[in-house]
Amino acid sequence: MRLPLLALALATFAAPAIADETSGTIIAYDRVDRIIVLDDKTIWTFGEKTELSPDLSAGDAVKIIYTGAADSGIGPIASILRVNE
Image 1 (cartoon, helix red, strand yellow):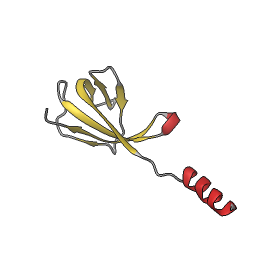
Image 2: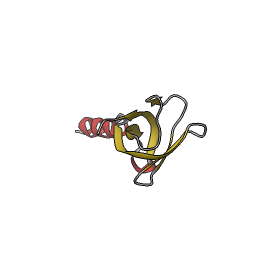
Image 3: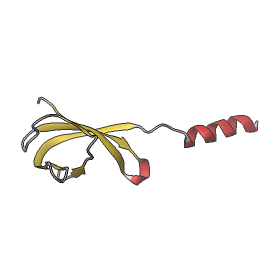
Image 4: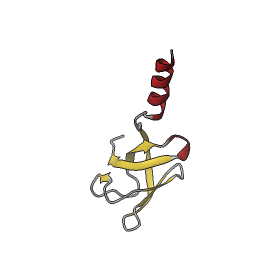
């Protein structure tokens, strides 16, 4: 009877990181400081390893894919890609 409970507990703590996403329109983009501000006023910072669409600029519609970190907010941003609207 304890084995199923132990398995459930381990599965809860070993849950994989879940990719999440958001989208919006860029209102500001700083390539040097690696910051994008979307039209909903959210500020996204990204690292050197983040996949970016080339030549992003203000006015572009984008999709941001990142790793969710539950109560801790967000984890690393995987990609920022231009989308067609």
